[in-house]
Length: 316
Image (cartoon, rainbow, N blue to C red; front, side, top):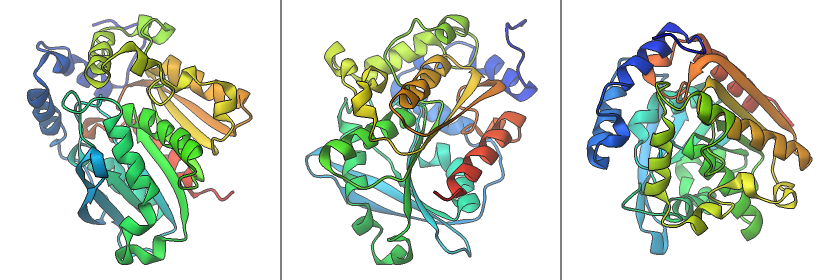
């Protein structure tokens, strides 16, 4: 099809494949989860890493698995607390494995990856409360197995709705005097439950992530408009004063993504609050371009991974 924005060939192929009915958000959640898991079975290079996991009891919010991804044969220099995306409904360690292995290897970081309870079975704020519990106890959770990492810098990161929850971690840490976060890394984050932005209008259909799909994801995650209006769900609605606590932040957005406008608007809002922001719009690509195995070797993914790993490695 002729597009208003030309895409890299691999992104074009993903758009064409994902536009065949039934669309993923039209499937029952369990079936949609399997579809994404199978999509991420696509062969891809995965950086060497030592991978382990533990079960963490988050109190009233339940037990969740937490994965550790450590660089092979390298001294750990950072901790990255990574929250995965995929609409609050889908996603897992498997769907994000190639991404977090690369982050670990290229930044000498221990990745701490909570597999939070997904929607619609678990509604807001369950997932962010689970993640915040792990983040607040991160030094004790990594324990003696990674004792060398205990004194290292802490970056919080996430993609898509994981970026949304990563932002919530900063807000919740500030309100609760939680872990000190040195950096915030966001790949195409969700920042507002609003579906009438310029990018939503331009890329509403046939660009992989549909406006109708995002509306469905929000319905699975939140039980009310009051929930959507909370700043830990729609952080773009936060007062400037609430954002002054944010650490240096990097935001990477894709050109042909319904979420682009709100991601860029959040970066501008952080700048207004005096936060150091590095922002990048990557051309010719779609949502999920750093996560999808099929897009790993695109210029867009390589550019984003080069930029984000260099930024994490930069000393402050």
